[in-house]
Length: 458
Image (spheres, rainbow, N blue to C red):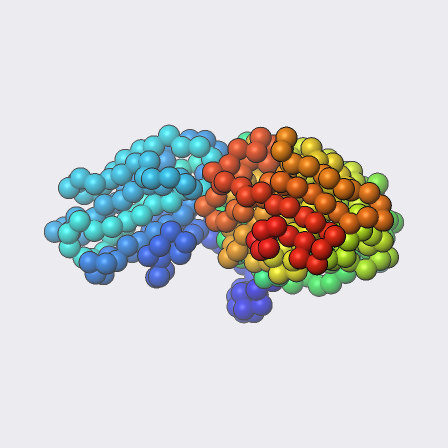
């Protein structure tokens, strides 16, 4: 987690503006990668063009398909323009006349979009106002009784909440989602750009088997959640409590922290926790996790229960290395079926082990590895988008791929595996394989020390 962000948050009042809307430009935002985030529908942003070279970028996320209305007004005597972009490609709409305000409308699909403001002539102040379907129906979500009143908390359950302890029922987007984070420093943009517009002021629950409630204020300030509650669930008895079941079911976003995925499976699989998490996705909520919390999102789960963690150069030397243990069928999330995930990917050289894991679960499946300080957000239609500083990797097989040697006690040999490298701005549909990225072919040969071909698989 970003300790600097958390420290600042701890100094703030516990009350928080649920909209968390951007109202003033923050420099530098001169490139798409540095775009200001946090735009809310129909909330004006005050900004300025200060020089001939000044360019201002903003990003915002549509919770559903709909109309984007853009209005840019500026000082008399100036002439400022704007361009609207989807995640990839050239501008889909521009406002480049002499009108003031400069206005336009576009029928857009759900997901992230960008606005670039430039000057044709002059320098000075402007106001940018964009109206779009952000999932917010206006005002705070109303309290509701869908799940009844909050049950009594078991005396041995550690639970900590910030915000409102009465359930609210916001209007959610028309698709559920899954947020996969790679560990290390958390990705603020993933929470503010993906989760905040989706949950629309709803409730968040953080699940752990040990640790602190440090996520509570951090997530509330990034998402404008009605409440954030951390539950420490370290036994099946606690996982089957009515309190835990209610807290999870009534949430709009379930976040599973880093830790030990084997502990999560041992404590939570086959309990009310498992069913309640599935329920949140079924009502179009969002599931997510980082590190171990990422690992348990997929159908197939690397589960190092009681053994040392798998290391690439060891598992490629023996297909059935003692560190390999794969469990399955914890969650029922439809877009996470036929997948296995991995984390801390580039930093810990996990390409080899993920290729071996894929060979174990079957060549007709896919594997997703996410590097630290990086996340991938998938909507229910399979579309994935990357946030953060680095990249994610996807491995899959096709008719050219050969799992040449995958026998216990023997080195692994895999030829022509497809490896995709995706970063911010790239797209990959985990259901269909549709992408704007061209893969490379990757070979694994565990009979030699330098077992990757190409030698740098990243």
